[in-house]
Length: 115
Image (cartoon, rainbow, N blue to C red; front, top):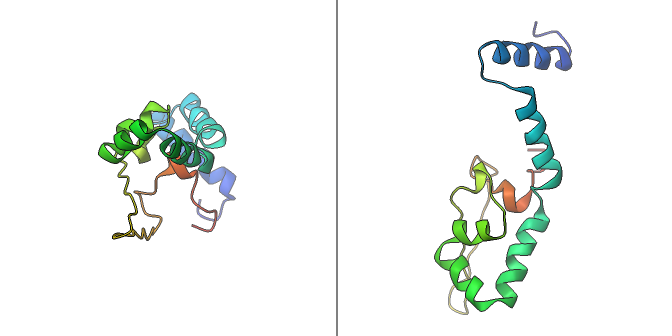
């Protein structure tokens, strides 16, 4: 089976998971829709713009990033624990992302295709 084209391997995997009750076609469609229409760098830009223009939101964002981001209807499994840091004249935060499982898809969109 490993020599079969990728489409056949995907179909075989979906069939096996469906038989065991672990996969539902409507779920897959919903996930694809979410990636195409919801998860986007524009979501992160929306959060930042709101923080720049609304001091009360900015404070909530710094206190509890997950809850404040959810206020804007932005969420997802990879956004279940969002930490927001502020740069100051004394502290400049540098985030080095390794594109692991903690990559924040809800606010940055899908990882680069080379990942």
